[in-house]
Length: 543
Image (tube, rainbow, N blue to C red):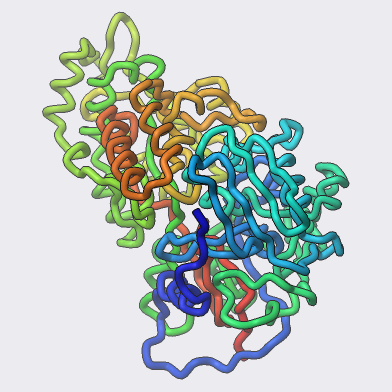
C-alpha cells in the first residue's frame, strides 16, 4: 500500500490558514506593511519546560517551543490528511507489519549531521529507551519493534502489531526527529539545546526568563504550512515565560511582545471587537478537556455514584459565563477537530432529582452537614488541580461544579498543586476526580487514555488511564481499531469504543483543549495541522 500526498502543498497550506487564522479585529482595513528581519517576541503562559527536548517527558509547552526547531517525519493538514515532510512518501505491507519511509534527500541537521535512515532509527530508539524518561513519545511508538536502515534514504519500521495510528503518531512534536549527534551528547546537553532541521536554532536559554531562537540560514525542509520557498523571514524569536495572563496581555497591547498564548476570555472578546489585535483559535486535537472519575476506588467504583456526579455537575452555565463564548461545550471524549469524534449530549443532561435518586440507590444518605455518608464514610472527592496546566478560568469552573454537586451531597475537595506535586498525587492514586490534558493526533488517543495497558506507568512515571478503566471488551475494541488499516472499519470501531467509554460515566467532557493566540505587529502566523502549535516560518513583523 503506497501512500502519496493527495493535495498540492500550496493548497494544503491555504486550507490550514483558513482554519486557523480565523479572525481579526479589522475588517476592510488595508494589510499592514511588513518587513523582513527583526526579532519576534512570543510570551507564553504555559509552564516553562524543564527540558527543551520533547522526547523527554512530552508535554504541550515542549511541543509549543520545539515546533520552531524540530520537525516530524510527516505532517497533517487541516482535514486530517497526512502529508510529506521529512519523509516524501511511505508504504505499508498488506499485513501492516512493516512501513517503509523514503526520506528527503540532501538534508542535514543544523549541526551538519545528515538526515538519513540511521537518524530515524536513533530517534525511535531514543524514545523507547527508559533512560529518556519519555511519556507521550514513548506511548506513540510502542508498536515499533525495530527500525531497519535499508539505505541512507529508506527506513523500514518493523511492527510488533499493525498500528493504524503510526503516521499520526509520527506527525507529532513529541516524536520529532533530532540529530543523533545531538542526542549522543546526553540528556543534560540535549535538554538545553536540541538540534533539528527546523527554521530556527536554539541559541540561549535563560531559565525562568526566556529562550532565544535564531534563524536557520540553511533551512531545507519547508513543511506543509510554508507559504514560500526558503526559511523564516524574522532573524530571531525571543520566547518569554510570563505566567500572569494580565501581564502578558499588557505586554501585547503596549507592543512589547508580538504574540501571547493562553489569553483571558475577556481579552479574546476585546480583540475580536477591536482593530489592532488578531485572534487565532486553534483547538488541540486528540482528547477533549474533561474531568475523569477514578473508577478503581470508592466512591466512584460504583457507576451509580459516577452518574450522579455527572448528572449534578451542570457545567454548561459556568462554561458560557466564564469563557464568554470562547469555549463551546463538548459531549465527546475527542476534540471537535477529530473527524472520528462521537458525541452524545443525552448522557450529560443536568438532573438533580435523578442524581439524588442514584445516590439513594447506592446507599449514600444525607448527613447533618449536607454531605452524604455511607458506612461511616463521607462522600468525599479529592480533586487535585495542576496550577501549571489549568487556567484561572478553568479553576473557577471547577469551583462552580464543586458547588453544583454539593447540592446532592458530594464534598469535592479542590487541591491546587504545582506540577510536580500534581504528578505525585496521581502516581499515588490520591484522587477521585482529575482534569488532565492529553494531546495526540488522531483517535488513537482513546487507546492511550482508556486501555487497561495504560494503567502501567510510562518510563516518566506517568500513567494515562486516569479513569482507571479496566474493561476487556473496551480493550478489544481499541486493539482492533489500532490494528485495522481500513478507514471505514476503523471509524465504526472507534464510534463503538466512544459509546462504551461515555456509558461508563467516568468521563465528563467539558470543551476542546483551548489554544488561543493573540497577535499584534506581526503577519503570517499560522498553526500546524498536527498538534495545533504555532509556526513562525511565514511570519513577518509589520512596520
